[in-house]
Length: 476
DNA sequence: GCGATCAGCT
DNA sequence: CACAGCTGATCGC
Image (cartoon, rainbow, N blue to C red; front, side, top):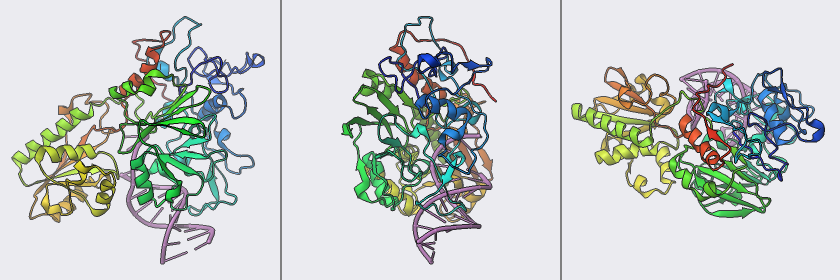
């Protein structure tokens, strides 16, 4: 998602706002009467300059053709998507003072539920493709290559974020990687040769070790240190997502600031990041995975307490219980670290995951890993194997040591509507001696956390005020 | 055969 | 549903 800031001296990216706080399509006096709402239905006419940020912003919601190169044979999927006014969704009301300049002025979404957004499709598979010329594109039965969407490009720079699957991107010399999850690094391999890759040191180690990318392309940037790259000031900030994940902050020579959150979980601590407190952000690219009021989940700490308490209770009743935590390749480490510390037990997982976890260089984690499943009641398995049949099979291999399984599946999706914020209401699914808890341990922001994150910028801008309305998103 | 990429699936 | 993959088919080399 992007928030565009209104600054009269910076018209190239941050055009003026309309009454909804969305980027205005009125770029010149001649086009003053164009780009207005149509039919009272908030469908917008695309009149802005071809290829401009505003043009792409709106086109992406209704028409994929802006992402297509000329002469393409492939038609984009027909979808009726609209830019949603997040200010409205979050209940922020624009005041009457028409002279006021908001600190952040417009929003567009990145990856969220498709029924009420906008920019990015569920994943890149929905993006249009163009015929592949020169660069090979083997596999999958066609000769098409995807085109980098505008919202992965940082305006007025030669930088992109998480855009590795598009081959060589014209005008891009710096490819930023926000974190080491496959949907973000897709396209990176040992054959990468399209330009410099910037990421945190931890992510850099993983990229070199597991994707075998030529180290000469990989440039680690320490958190909280401002680097000057191609004349742009760049700072990586802790994203509170998975290990090595970063928000990327860009400050241009003309004063424009852009913040790309990658995937992140907004928290109070972020409100103290000096770069975010002291500087306006003109365009904000935001992770809106749970940008719907129905997603309410507790703090990580509360969930960890619940997991530890549940584990202790189980072991008290059934000392021969095997504790299983489901996890992706990286992420959710705090869940099993908390159990490990509370019970004073080691952590078993297979060799390939141990190799990844050891690459973090976290001594408090590495020291707790062990290579023998009999040695500890705490095992880490891929989240996909947290099914009763699979766990029953797994238990068989340790039948002399363990007689029951207590498993935790940590994700934000399992926790939304009915149970609200009451952890104690979570009911496990039980089959025989296998018990599986879906726990609301999320590494993405909840709706409220997203709202509060954005609100920080609005606060310092007195012309915006918070309205207690409960505006719901439009559902198509 | 190998590595990369795709659709389908969860 | 959507996240962050996983699997198997298919392609170029």
